[in-house]
Image (cartoon, rainbow, N blue to C red; front, side):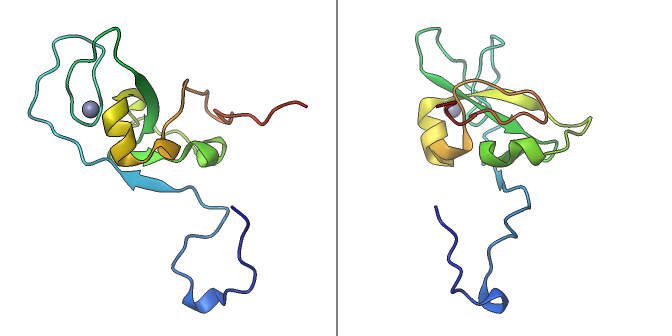
Length: 114
Ligand SMILES: [Zn+2]
């Protein structure tokens, strides 16, 4: 998405481009997962066949945008990479999730080398 350079800074409510975007995960803490493969949002167990994505979760349950993850400074209380079911990933926004977790300081979706 190209930045709109014509937009006056004073009226912009967007975060600065260098900041890390985060989004609260509206999770449901009621279900008790029975396995260690569960969705971080609805906290239901994921069947092995069920499509899943990964989302980086901070200590206050904010998703870190994968495009900004390389600039994220991990904290001890972070939940780190968690599984999220496809349905919940859609609710959160697919762009907040990735196919595979990335290491801190590394973008999870590196651009193609070509
Ligand atoms: Zn879910």
